[in-house]
Image 1 (cartoon, rainbow, N blue to C red):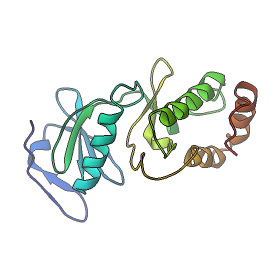
Image 2: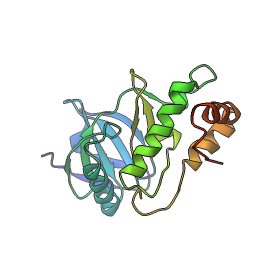
Image 3: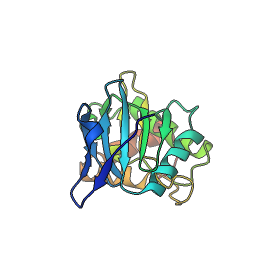
Image 4: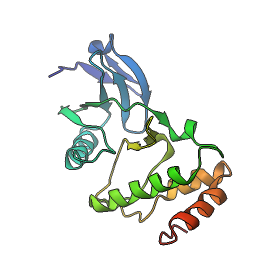
Amino acid sequence: MVKLYYRFDKHSFITKDLKDYKYLGKGHSGQVYLMPNGRVIKIFKDKDTCREEYNILKAVERSPHFPKVYAVGDHYMIRDYVSGVNIEDYINPITLDQRFVNNIVNLSEELKGLGFKKIEMRFPHVFVQKDGNLMLIDPRESFKKKIPYPISFIKSLKKIGLAGRFFKILKEERPDVNWR
């Protein structure tokens, strides 16, 4: 297990052990680094958030839509690296097709089947794999907060002018799904 020595100031984590790790990015909860072994370490600002995310990922470890987790500490978690293309970089009028819409609906149905109350897919947290399947990272408050369909996803589609196309395909492919 990796032993971390860190301190947190208002700007960033300073961690001696991360000098050989590649910085991948940061979000609301913390920072993510690629480790030399190909896994990632996510360092959290808050230990309760760390434990909650770890517990969620352990609960869904059989799902192909989430990274596998390996270890957890007070402020860090080690999990699989999620490759692919983030939806923000992937989505455009050409890639927004029937297969993509069906994959989004299938992912939302899987979340419900896993017992999630928060059926949410924010653009920065969804990665499209080479085979078109979707991977979801950062499943915060999945069993607590009630969001019945991917509201942030739809808002993001509206911002980039693709909501109309998405709903047209959704109506054709899955008339049983009502996300409006």
